Image 1: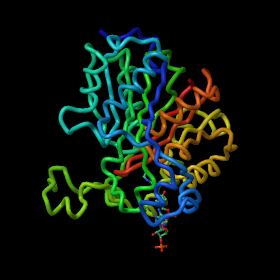
Image 2: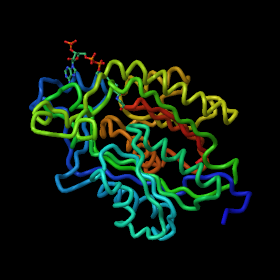
Image 3: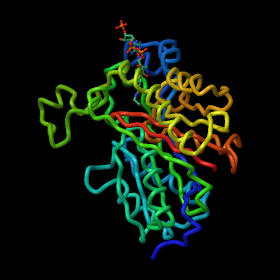
Image 4: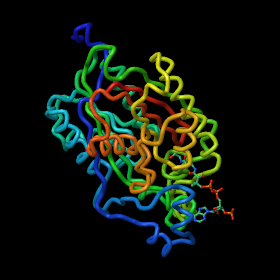
Length: 332
Ligand code: UT7
């Protein structure tokens, strides 16, 4: 059965986040690798990041963020008919983190699957949720971005280990009239840049063995500079695409929530979109780069502070390994 035709849009009705308790500061990293607080702050904007406890897996972080989002939406888990989890660090390859989360939540009427789109996972998840709802296939969708990058980070590699943090963010979506909620979406990928951010070992190409473990193939490899150059260009392309599609200009935005990879990337995007600083949500200083969790966490924190309010026009834009990038424009 499909929904009534006047509900051909989808809107975010609840948002939540979770940050693990343990915090690693830049001073902690000064004791671990050859780096300084000053280098990390000036080159990235990061001061500290949260790290999951040993007994926490992705679905545990996702569970906490989802509970907050469901409560905010006043939705019971049994009402969910689709759960989408963006992650590259699921509890295990099979089952998906989404299925584990579904069971934990008691979302007994829901389908569940993971999306691997690296840092763009939440944007991709929102885009898919929007399609499913607006086509009348689903009524109540939970989209989660969760990452425990500390599990695949080499803490002897100063070029990557200072960047990443663990977190989860979640949103609940429901049908709405087409001119409300999500106004436009955009997703794009370019697999020819795979070598800018990848994890060589552990998949079907290079299953882990003693030698590959010794070579550190279980850890993320990153060419920061190459990513940096593509990030601003791709985030601008995605932002302009959703703005044009919605018949808007950047001046119509109340808030920009960019993926939090580097304060200099965020600043580059902000300047090129001609936005004042107060319209850009930034939390990289206390969470670091949390990949797919970064946008929903920044959103939920800004809502909690009372900065973001219902009715605001919000542009979310992501970029990450793959390469993947995309944007979602909403009237919240
Ligand atoms: O989440 C989506 C995917 N990720 C991104 O989009 C990340 C994008 N890239 C970046 O954010 C930046 O490229 C980084 C923060 C990763 C690196 O900043 P950078 O300004 O591009 O530095 P760099 O890689 O060009 O390195 C400059 C220097 C190098 O030393 P030499 O070769 O010039 O002597 C590095 O070895 O900085 C050195 N360096 C460090 N020094 C102190 C690299 N990491 C560190 C460190 N502490 N932690």
